[in-house]
Length: 186
Length: 192
Image 1 (cartoon, one colour):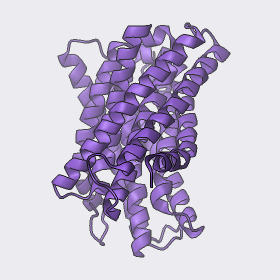
Image 2 (spheres, chains in turn red, cyan):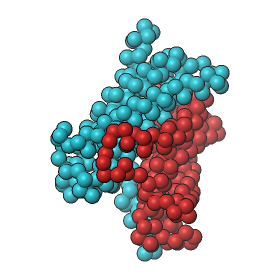
Image 3 (cartoon, rainbow over the protein chains, first blue to last red):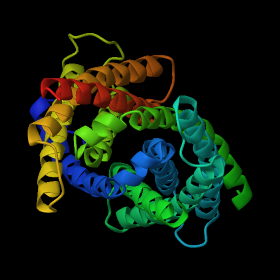
Image 4 (tube, chains in turn brown, purple):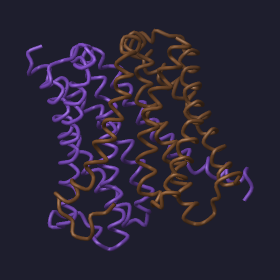
């Protein structure tokens, strides 16, 4: 991944650009989904407030799990299959989502209500946030384990590959899940 | 270790970082929620938002990781000076790729929306927002990442665990704030 010990602006840009462009294309897909529900989001500002934080937290859950799995893998304490490290980290991810997302829903509602019309009852926003969070935790677990396993099978260092892939895939999934949950609940 | 021990340990370790970054994300959302006028007037801007925020995270996350590894390898000194050639090259490369990728994202978003037959603002508006926010945000983020990683390293913190959350949080907050500023500048320039 590194451009060697001689660092030049051109060298670094060249090394990172292809990945960046690919990830941008992926992010535009989630932007398109947002564009599709733009009118709903503008109608209910508390949902619009939830967008960046849902995306960010989903990406963080994925990247924290992926970083822990990569480290465990390097230390040789990880086996794919029914493994205590694997299951324990997955359980923690679900627990983190169940803790953080309801607070985010309430926070998004309170911030919107403080400056104007929230448009939705607080319970709806909390349920949207919690439902999205739990679904995303499940997806983050699947994606992180799959990406770490794929990197291992392909002989790549999971540190280099897994985290950017997992973060950006979870970003896109964050928008997708929010879109789905909003369609069902609101 | 049992499953329970692993789970409790992982939960405790991650919760503060996740909560701090969530607070930043909530602030970013608050800015986005207040941007409804700009989002309606620059059609297609919302489509661009995830790509621009992610580009910040990816570019400056990579800068943080690069500086972290270089500190560990002793390639750079943990001192902030402009005479530090490697530091200067890494920072300039980050800002340059940030601007390049943001501009590309704006053009791609425009092309995509036109192809799909959706209504979209003129391409110069989207590119303008991407460039202006990329430039202001890039300056702020380079300063933050370099300072946090180098100062953190001097204080005995591991830059590898420090850089990620710092970049995601400041990236979201600074990214959204500069997006709002850039959108207002572009709208003012467009006479709208």
